[in-house]
Amino acid sequence: MISLGCAKNLVDAEIMLGSLLKSGAEITNDPAAADATTLCSLLRELNALKGDFWIRLLYTHPAHWTDELIRTIAECPKVARYVDMPLQHIHDDMLARMRRETSGQYIRDLIAHIRAGVPGIALRTTFIVGFPGETAAAFATLLDFISETKFERLGIFAYSQEEGTIAGKMASQLTDKVKQRRREQAMAAQHEVARAISEGFVGRTLKVLIEGGASAKDLKAAKVASWEHGLIRGTDEDLAQLKGRYLIARGEADAPDIDGRVYVRGQLPVGNFAKVKIIGHTDYDLIAEPI
Image (tube, rainbow, N blue to C red; front, side, top):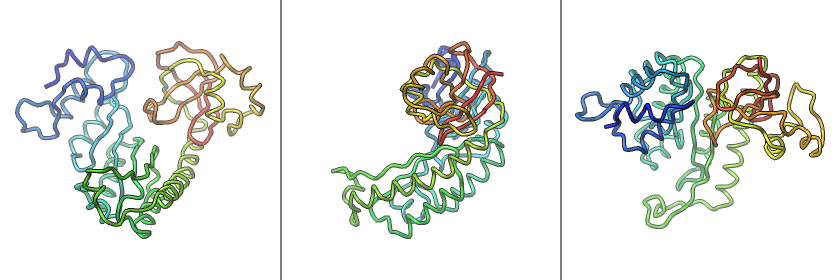
């Protein structure tokens, strides 16, 4: 069972629950389980620690959510309004083949329940396309679900056959060409969603965590030279001149390494939280200035 002292040692600007799990914590959603910390009680204990920080909930399984967990997130201001919940698919046949313990309707109801219980929460998920037996109809159901649900953050993986696994021995394996094409189609569907979500942030004030300076390489990768609603239009040489003028930050809806960034035009203390105003966006990133 995790100790509160262990949690205190991890408090900086952000606590990833995955870090606590790797430290040997025994965490369950069953309040009756002996000698184990429930996820809800852990979140409440962490939320009670002094300091300004985020607690970020990662790698949650949709089958293990409870009403109490939703209430806990809503009632704990230090728990980031962000949840990583890999769904893998939405079609019932595929969920059964993947042994996901859920159904398409259960997932839809859970998402609606989470969003109603925690207004403004950002949902991150991942899907696997090209899993053995995925028909064109099953994939079409997934595409529709992506467009309709409008996940704030989403990743798509093409299934990779591995020897010695149950899935690897299944019949109806798809070709690499089909798997890659479906991944591209799914990402294209999410691209439209992500761009609209980013556009919706323009004009808003956000609390962000300042991570460090943005290099010319960072700015080029983020396509800052063509960001919307802004004035920067130029070449790679122009980007080099911008080095030192932008900071890299993350908002509450951005987990490190896997989500977008907030590029802040100005100077702020690294490692601290700051309030910024969003003045533009690219496809997946935001552009801001200090308030």
